[in-house]
Length: 100
Image (cartoon, rainbow, N blue to C red):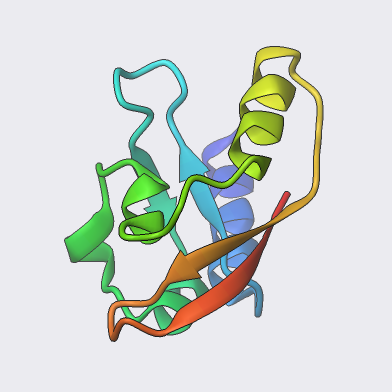
C-alpha cells in the first residue's frame, strides 16, 4: 500500500462514527495498536490510556462471556464473526458492544 493510500485509509478510520480498534495478533497479549476517536467517546478512555493493552480490560469485573470463545475461534480460523459483548466504560457504566 502506498503512503498516500495508507494516509487515506487512516483518515477513513479516524472519521468513522463507529468505534474502531486494530489489534496486533502477532504480539504476545494481542495489544490494541490503533483506536479511533469514536472508540474514545464510546468507552471514555483516551488513546494514551489504552494503546498497547489487551482489550479484555473493558470486561473487567464482569462474568465470563461465552461470546469471547466465538471471537477466538473465528480469529483462529481467519473468519469473520459478529457478537455482542457487555463492556465497562471508564465511568463504570456497563454497555453492550457489537464486535465484528
